[in-house]
Length: 178
Image (cartoon, rainbow, N blue to C red; front, top):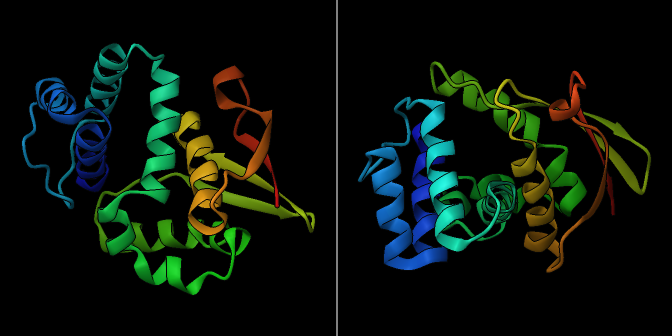
């Protein structure tokens, strides 16, 4: 996984859980200053998530979802790095429809990057988001959806899951209501 995720996870750990969160991140990953373009083992993300869950007395799934919300709605690093995408979108749906384009650009500019891929079925006031990732970080997706709503409307987008890779589906299908 690319270091940008680790950089934001370190930022999240500190901003959500203070010095204890930063220490837990460092101990779980062995990283003090992850480099955005470097590759790091995927397992280190889950090690950090489990450690933060233990610290906060939450389930790892809850921490993953909160991290997804933070990633899109609060992370100063992401807000700065992807400002052009946030600023060019008129609303949450418009931004969400650009996420796969962002991931395509990432795979072209960062060798070895394998971000999740998205497809969409536009139903007007609903959008079916089809998520595919070998990492199966579905809970992060759900937080990202909520975070997009927070970023643009000040409230989470509402969504419902139609299918999930964690339950045997080939892809996650999440219906987002605007």
